[in-house]
Amino acid sequence: WVTNAGLPSSYWSKTYNNLQHDYELYDFGQYSVNLSTARPDWTGAPVLSLGVQNLLDERGLIGRFGTAAGVASNLVSAGVGEGWTYIRPRTISLRLTAQFD
Image (cartoon, rainbow, N blue to C red; front, top):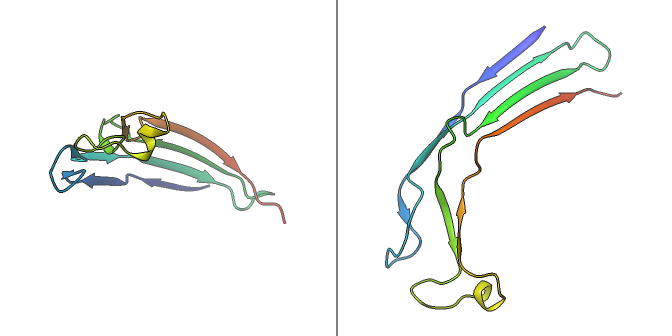
């Protein structure tokens, strides 16, 4: 068996959506966990992977769309409206892969 593990992390420092500092964005950290095990000696060299992104289920703003300082954008005129874009919530994935030669 061949196993791997990882604990990647990232931090996005505070910034603003424009020069007038209308809205604060970012200012959050995020951790993930990746585990995998493989059998390269078996037919198909199967690999089983488990991943958990945003392990602590942090909430953070990564964007704003719609109006900025009272000026309508193309999204608002198209009927989309105003809103925020958030980081992805905790996500768990399980993957089984194999090689076919």
